[in-house]
Amino acid sequence: MAEDHDAPHATNPTIYDVARVSGVAPSTVSRTFSRPGRVNVETADRIRRVAAELGYRTKPVTRALSTARTRLFAVIVPDVPDRFFREVIRGATEAANAAGYTVVVVDAQRSAESERAALDRLLPVVDGVIFAASLLPDATIRVAAKQRPTVVLNRAMADVASVLTDSADGMRQSVEHLAALGHRELTYIAGPAASWADGIRWRSFKVATHRLGLRARRVGPTQPTPAGGVAAAQAFARQPTSGVIAFNDFIAAGFIRGLAEAGLRVPEDVSVVGFDNLAGRFGGPPLTTVAAPLPHLGSHAVRILLQQLSGAQAGLAEPGGTVRPTRLPALLVVRTSTAAPTSRDSNAVPPAPDRAA
Image (tube, rainbow, N blue to C red; front, top):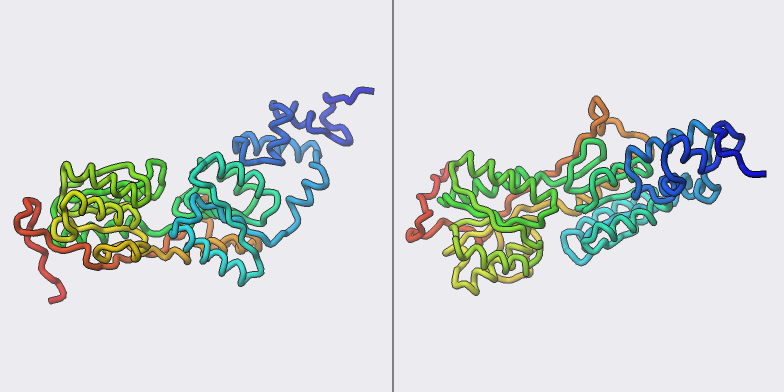
């Protein structure tokens, strides 16, 4: 006898019952429970609500995977060899180990498709997920957050816990430092086009330069690597300024190398500031940079996951269901890659007086 899929209150409702009532294909219902990262968040919510109303239950194996604690946390990063992410992983691993958890690291190889595929495989078998500089859209991350405790790094979301360096304040410190030295025209060497952090730094750069009456230029987008910095130096040399702030230290290091190839010296001709305090081994003048508390990004993310698992989320949520991002302080570290512009530089103005004097 054929199964009656038109009976929504059958004793053992099937995936076809859920699909019919939800108005979707059975394959979409299947993906909602097995690969939630591939289903639109609104659709997934509707399917789960219908399934609950009908009394539909997934297979016992799937149910066991979704409820049993594995004491595993996934940390998904775009590029494991990148020292930025290695520092984040180190902080997360130390905090997780101290709490009796193990960290599984996934290298997404700067590919949104690879990141999504890894997420699909990991969600059923981990207790929480940390996204470090994710390339996935907000909607996909929200779907994951409905399945497992989730934290995003260096990206603020209204409804998912996030931890980020205060890049806006770091940029403000950098611009004010160069202005105090006497620079009045600055260039921002941008990072990747899809980077949330790059957007924040560029907007903060424009605000700070406008407030101080400085002229602002932008070169990029640029790959966040020394090779990207060399390429940016070639474009910059066609219309140079006396001061430069780069998206990160790796771009800054390559940029300094490219300036040398173009016959420009640092800091005599161009003052350069980086971000993240990671370029100590690249040679050249010691780099003035914004120091980010990278291991603390990872360790704080783990602490939030543990709070979510224990249900102790007091202090994280704002009225109305939004979630406050945690901002860790940024600190400008002044070294010898920045100095007052030379008198022959048309952009030079007298340095600001030392207020401490």
